[in-house]
Image 1: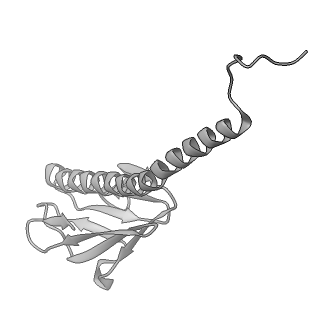
Image 2: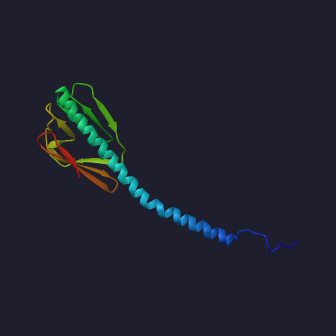
Image 3: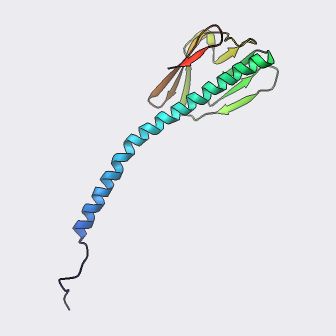
Length: 146
């Protein structure tokens, strides 16, 4: 028995053309999204670090004690003295790298009991191929992000 000419359906070539168009359209949207995701990851980390620094400063003022934010390989801690228990420990992904540019600053940010920062300096945050810079100025414990 033969096929009738009025049967409807798609040929293999038509389906391959549609699938190739679908793959092309879906892959075009993936690459810009990856860059956007990396930028948002860095923005989120810098914002959280900035909030933790403000918390450290306010803790120093409210408790009238020297308070530090110490940076280690995969986490940072907030403590008010070496012999007292730590206040906060926050882990961050291994892809982030925090680099200190001022040798006098060490790997910590120290806030005095009045809220002023102990040493000025610059901190760079690296995430894959993106960078952010935090600048700490003397007096009133001010810092800003670039």
